[in-house]
Length: 116
View 1 (cartoon, rainbow, N blue to C red):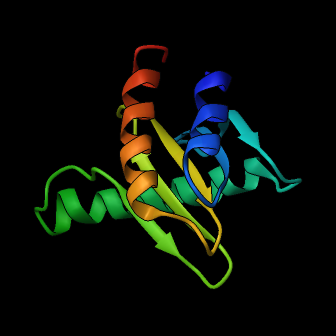
View 2 (cartoon, one colour):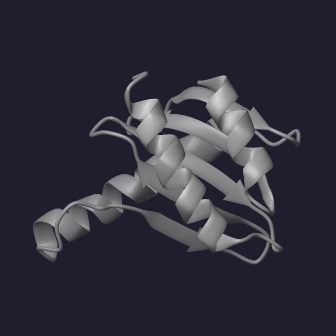
């Protein structure tokens, strides 16, 4: 799994971390090129993904959440569900390429699904 995450960070312009998280908020595996705390990133974003998924499936009748992108001043995160219990997190900087994040993120999630 670590190999897929490391390659994902290398392939996406502006990516600095990739992780597999559980919807329970626990980090399964991660790779980062910085000293940032992946446990914290996964825990906080698991809650956001659970909330967004609940709103879309139950309240808005929008179907299953297929991806979630959040952009802040200094941090952007692309989330892609791998299966009902796990998700892929890709942390991006200001010069990131969202198209690459989506393309390579979907591919990585498919590859990781068979390993989980």
